[in-house]
Amino acid sequence: MRTKPQLGLSNLHSGLVNREGEVDAWLQEEQSNTKQVSNLATQLEKMRLDMELAMTRYRYEDKEKQRQHEEKMEEMRLQSPSGQVRLADKKKF
Image (cartoon, rainbow, N blue to C red; front, side):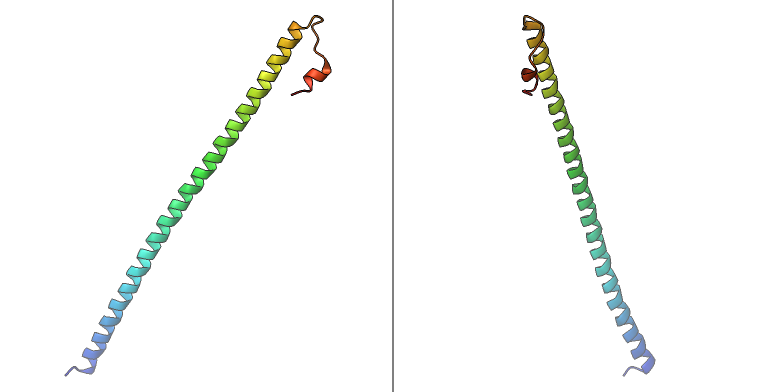
């Protein structure tokens, strides 16, 4: 038969084991959460870069259209007999 101090130590030991299990479970959950946060941060950064790339591409295409339009207008101006293009032609773009 166990004495009271032995029972107390036994209970304390099993309580510590339970607490260690809780701590281990908590640590695993925290590590999982940290990985999820890291993955989300990576995905967010990728989305930001994709958006930045799309905006850069849009600006480039817009400038290219503007350049082509100006080039066409200059070509039309040079081909016209008076060297002038009508105002209505310039407003088409």
